Image 1 (cartoon, one colour):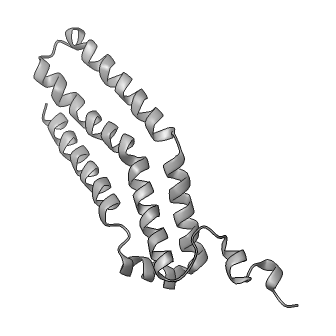
Image 2 (spheres, one colour):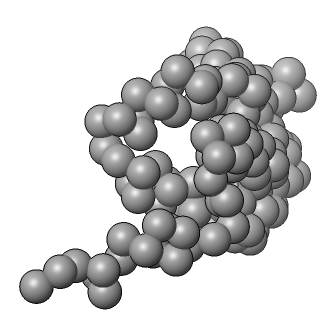
Length: 143
């Protein structure tokens, strides 16, 4: 029982972290620091990976599978010889994690959109590949 409540609190913290990530990350100063430390290409690649992860259907499939496990756990309540509130305490963390998995695509989409906005603010076109934008790809290297 106590471990279920502690797990629910940790899962709620994971949900709060994910929502905070979607709301605040990256701040413009953080984005500029990442860009100065790792370069434009690395930050652009990070944004493109966020966009690709947001387009993935894997988190939703994992949430559906987890929901199936939760329903199986609740259905087996009589076999487990537990009261309803003990089962709820056991299942509550999985509910929070399901919410995080369902919200993951929207959160990553917001992070990528914020990064695109920062690129536009710097005068870049985020939809044009970097090699075409500046002409500084591998073909521009002078021998």
